[in-house]
Length: 195
Image (cartoon, rainbow, N blue to C red; front, side, top):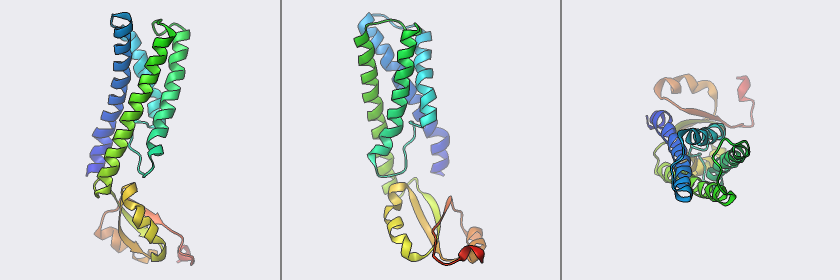
């Protein structure tokens, strides 16, 4: 149930929050250095320049895993593409002119803030998943010898392994009794796919 709310409510909220951070930092920088607010056209460009790579790289998500690098990678790529869009828009005159140092400070502060937000989001959901919440219900098909490492790391990835079965003959009964979000299939060494 939380997974549905996470996809429908929380992810769009994080996406909009990231855009608001980018637009707010740009507005704040323009106010500090130029003592005036920027036009809405410039803010619209900033929002679009952040939104397009954020959707492509999915930087608004909290990836399932235990590596901090997984949290930084999409945000870093989004920030790099945003920086390219931003610098091209300055050269074409779409964004108001300011000194080069002001634009550099804006890009640097945006990178630091967005990476901090992304890291905080990742840590929050990582700890939340370690407590057994926001877990996906999993059926594991394979030998029980292969499951020890997967069970050990399952909470890091947000999975809860409910059942382990060796052959696929009992699948219909199991699916009738319980609902599973994912099915993991591990090669058991014998030819179970031909049964």
